[in-house]
Image: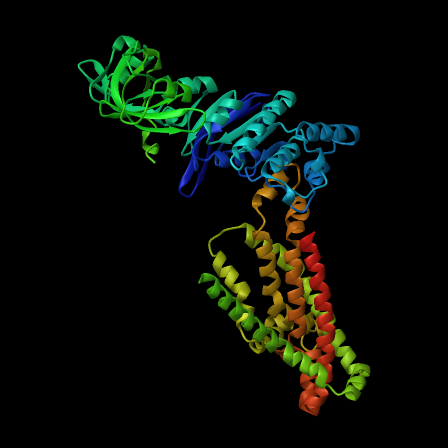
Length: 364
Length: 262
């Protein structure tokens, strides 16, 4: 288990501030944030490659804040793999063993064989890292990091340099490795879909501040701010106004107070200023006739794009632009096209009220 | 259209290259071909010539190894740290490149001679500098040092610090990381710097002659023969020095290239 308590680190023009996280043993934890939010910096502090200005890091209850990296047994896999070009694949994987007395003989050999087999890199071990593809390099760097049986495995944007197909394969392999080896893992990424497919828990970071921490599903379903909502793919976010005890957005789209939960209607929300309504693209229903949803608007399709898996439709309704996702089948079934008049609906349980607290940095 | 332009550019570059290579090689080949065979044979057996070439090679080798010991760690420090005044420090390292070597000799003579406390101190410890091989090495170090330091710095800079980070997290200390990763990867670049340093030291004359005339290094002997006996007697020593230096230079280059390939 790793506990990070009130950790701060200042650089000219940037600071990690009061970071607190707890990652339980065997957990796969993700740190999600945009480029420049301090994710890699935090990983390097955890690994002992940089020392914090204040706060502490506890590893299985032991304070390791001032410990050197070689004493922590925390492995890191960088996005550019950082394989040693002066060594073969085999030498790369075994590199960490020469500094660890406990690994010797049979134990080490079986560990090496297991990892090499699990990652399917048996045929590569005599090769030089320069002659490997991105996916192969990633597998080798994972084997190198795991052979030393680290207390925690740190993954720095592990899929960012891979093509879509390889990324998918490595994600599956990583999940399998984690399920087998049960290594506590902290992965940083800017891609929520990676978090969704791998991590049990996630912390969202922006400009050196943690924005939200929780189970992946919980953060996905209940983002606590506009920033987090944006990051977890909630594309329809509109400012709310509050008049005569009624929330409304766009051109008189009024929300029924009975449809909002108590949490959404706490006192601090009731002035309506600085709050947003968020609707997921996949929660919007599109039809050519009136719909049975709690809310219904009529609008016109302004643009359509298709990525092969789903069709993204932008609809102009009540002076707002909504984004909805449809399966290509559904899209053709409805006979949709640009400029077509349609109905757009959503249900009460799809409404998310979002706070303003992180607004300033979402305007990119 | 663009292909014609490219071809013309290619021809121009080729011609420039030919001019440069001829400019370097013609005088060297000419010297080797026009040296009198009989005088050459006498020169090869001449003890003064053998001693001077031996002194040149010995002092250049000691110089290179000394700079390696002190310069490589300093180059690593410069490559891995950004600090206020770094540019000034780097400029100071480059000073010996920009000042005339006779001036370098005068500067060193001023501090190593009896008129300076340092010279008097060294003399009191029994370490004679002026007129000795120690003086030759000091002069060579002064003028050649930037070559190795800059080559090593460039080699280290080109290595991602992430490799070192990974090595540390895998259990290696900073020293072990430097040895197994940084130095090992940077070695071909460092070796190239060492070869250049050695070659530069062999060719040094201006700074050395100000501090140590005797014992002579090969360039001093060539100068001495030229002054005393003229061109015909200085040419054979030059030819021997060029031949031996080139052979060693080529061998070292090949070794370095093999290192890069590996």
